[in-house]
Every structure is written in C-alpha cells, then in structure tokens.
Length: 136
Image (cartoon, rainbow, N blue to C red):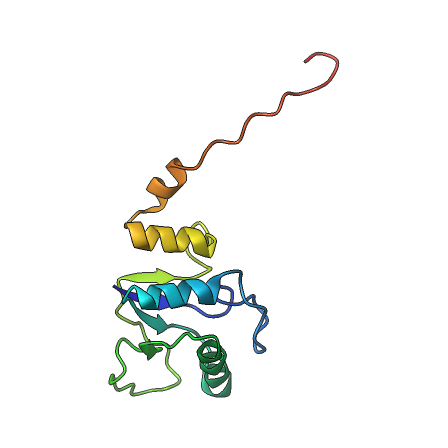
C-alpha cells in the first residue's frame, strides 16, 4: 500500500519551523510499516531547508521514505513552490476528520485492514460512574 504521511503534528508535535518532539511510537510504527513492505511518502508543507531537516530527522531514526512530496521518486515537479497532490492509498494526517489516533491504532488499522468503525466498535465501553449526592 502507498501511504502518505504528514510531518508536523503527525510524526512530531507542532513547532514549525523547528522540529517538534516526536509523537509517541511514530517512527517505530513507520519503520514497522516499511518492514511490512508499504511505500511511505512524506507529504508535508515544509520546503527547502526545513524539508531537508525533516527528511534527515526521519532518516536518523531509521525512516526512509519512498518519495518526498511526490507520488514516486522519479516524478518531475514543475514548480517546487507548489503544493502537489500525491497519489496514495491512505493519508495519515493530524488534520483528518476525527483527528489523529495514536500510532498503535493506526498500525492496527493498516495491518488488519480495519476502518474507524471496526476499531472503535471493538473498544470496551468505560463503566458509568455512579453519581453521588443528595438525591442519587
């Protein structure tokens, strides 16, 4: 599967233009997805020096992307300032509808081919707390 992954707010906490603190298990999960033979695309608004820093940061943690801000490595980008859409089967982004689940849930969804409904319907319900007061 080809998976596009955002950087700021998804792999790391928001701190642009600096690189924020890593989100728990983000690079571990990305390495596992690569081991599972998925092609990862770094899909970010970062450009130039900030983009190079993000790619290097990921590489230092063992995450090597199939492509960066393009659908495949050989793709020619006419305008490097433009924000191109990439062709991917799945997009992992903190601005997804519903927000970003933790990386363990993301991995389970991809590994087991589950969607949001499947994953969250399997979560045990939290027990209801008894109200305490004069009339309860």
